[in-house]
Length: 367
Ligand SMILES: Cc1cc2nc3c(=O)[nH]c(=O)nc-3n(C[C@H](O)[C@H](O)[C@H](O)COP(=O)(O)O)c2cc1C
Image (cartoon, rainbow, N blue to C red):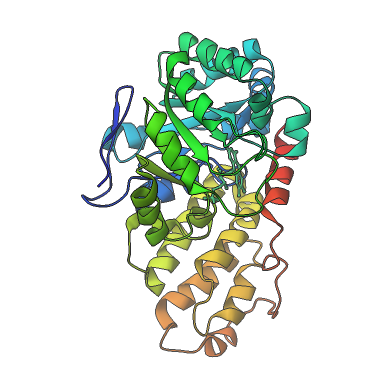
């Protein structure tokens, strides 16, 4: 079914024979080292770092320093379970080269160049998917970054500017000549942003003309979708974003995690996030993961509402420890009565913003 994917010195294989090779897509505000480790542990064979602005890399601040924390890479190097692909974006090619060199020095194993971001602020600055308006400029960036680095370079892009200007076949043909080792194709146009459906037929066409491995991306929501994408497009690997954010177990295959596995994952993730961002921010950022880890679990809605309002690690543990010992034997109501936390039926987190807003807010705080 899926062949091994060769990217420079790395051979990226499926978790188990017969499975599609699945990788974690870069996601601003999400793909930090705690989440990358969670996904790698589940079976993501390459993990993407959230995109990092090359200007910010060169004029470091605390936020960029945190993004450039690749402490998880030693685990990948020692075990071979995954490979870390750091992602840059920018508008000035000299700056992109310098930024990429810094990330290489920080331990990135693969350099990914973002030519797919469709957030208006990024497009206005001629970064991200704006490169699709000038493919010579795009290829120059690929060539210059690849030439300056000793680690392999991949690119992530979209089908083209809009349906009248599909350029993905030209991009994949020229990318290899310019030095790219693989291309990740989000099967939407820039104009589509996240609307409509990803058109996988273009991934299939890209695979046919490409000399380098193609990662298919877009609208893989279940493990079955990942298998179907490989079957329908023959892509070498499947890159997953939103479904991984909501359900990192997707990388492990067909099985559905039981309740205790979810509790253990939530505790581990919480621990790492607190280590990464400190208790205040770490716990706050964990709320969205708590919401998705326990989404739809029978009898758990009241407790989930409490969990997404916690402010401290102790409050989170109080709930998770009780769940661990009592649920599913007890109803959530029984346990709820033992908790000192404020209870509420509603959580602001359950009304999540649209993805474009999520990306947008992450971008505005990172550039
Ligand atoms: C919250 C969020 C943040 C994202 N940030 C990035 C990013 O930093 N770099 C990038 O290339 N794509 C980014 N994307 C796009 C995804 O990598 C992916 O291409 C897109 O979500 C389609 O894949 P999916 O259907 O599996 O979600 C982001 C998407 C989301 C939802």
